[in-house]
Length: 297
Ligand code: PMP
Image (cartoon, rainbow, N blue to C red; front, side, top):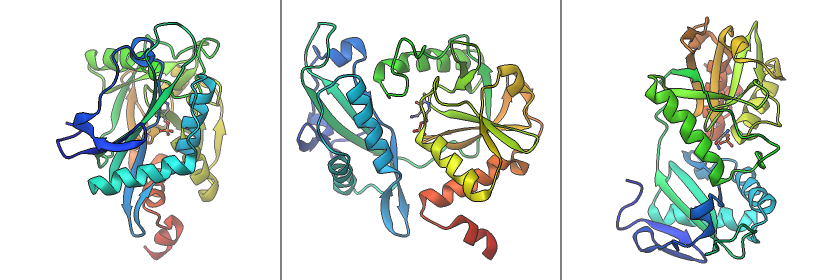
């Protein structure tokens, strides 16, 4: 359950009970997947409840609305403030936050006439961290960047993610990895990917992926820790030969990958660069100094 009778959400200019909020069945967003959204997390830190990378997420939400030509003019600062209010009203600390911008009733295939912002949240602590995921190469390709604004987080794009994820689960895997339209590894249904080979990390460059905020954070961590990392295309075959690999995303954080198409990565996760990045990421979201902690340890 995502909400109960007491849960408060922000909905189109006011705070209302989640149970009372209604969406129009004639919304263009429902019929055509024409909505944009974000997935954000807040953490209980020593400095209080903090939304991780709120600016980056709300800037991306605004970008998504803009490229999809939805009328929308709420600032990043205002949306951040509204989100803290949602958290406070529900007494949430560790939470997953889902802002969605959707459009008014309209059956025509034209840009949105009116848009509504809703911000919902639910309590959530990470459950993936201990699990190493077994991936399969999906038979579904990622959306072609010639057909979609793939750097935007658009609801309709996630039909592709559902197909890939369900296919993997039906075949006994934990998760899928999708290739781009040219056959190179792109990303997971809801996460970016890094592989490690001979002490160097590789991640697909921007162009065929959703450029994740966690991916950018991982690049930041690599820079801080002096880890060699390259944004470079690679194939599924090259990935199967990798020493180690991980997924990264706001919800998943840093998740160890065990295998791709049943080829097990050679290194123990605990020996990989990803493992250190996983610790560093935990420190960052909790606003702790990672290097200092390491020196003290
Ligand atoms: N790729 C896809 C397709 C996603 O849905 C997500 C999750 N938003 C990501 C990558 C990771 O993005 P972020 O780190 O910004 O959550």
